[in-house]
Length: 291
Image 1: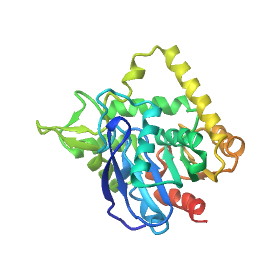
Image 2: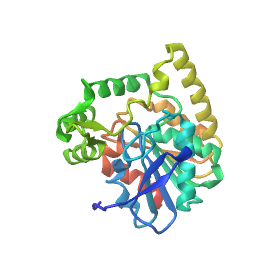
Image 3: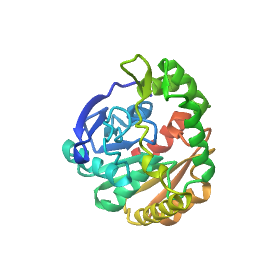
């Protein structure tokens, strides 16, 4: 894998929210990637060069993340991410394509696939599924609380990087440095803040535990139903040490829910598979995408 510098585009999403898209190559079937919560399009930097010679490789910053705009009305439900993707694809002239999504991006990809099954040439879901392991959900919340302390700002990107090292214990130093570099921006007062909108989960914060559980049940049902509508070849990628996607859920997705599904388990990786073991991730997805 060799480093490649992507081209950055800014295109309108749903309701005029500006979306940033990275493009590594322009020839071939489009290969569109969606990151997870708290990340940005640069999380695919190690993997993009692997498929760039064969696909038109694109990665999207979800609204409220990376260099995409924050929504002033705090509209961060799945339907708005799907709407953004629809507008981005229209603007860039993308019709039939391969869709890849990690974590939150995987859920957006699943719901998009259920609504537009005929547009997909392939689907890759990276440690993302209809049912989430509560242990991992709790761990991610604790990691965020440990990384973002006090007023939520940092004295430097290096300070943020030290917090990331606790949240990504097996990630390589160069990956952590890149995540820190792209994950924060400097404010007028000289302090640094995360690019992820702190209001991203504001809607859920006002819910009772029972309301949140009911919301998740409704979403889970929609996701299982969406998987059943996907006719194209689909790959479920699970980190062997994942605490988000359980082995049972991954098996059910690949063997029962998806009409043409298969499963790849990547060793030495937890939830952030492409960061924890970039070579293992690249091998698993390349075997699927390149044949």
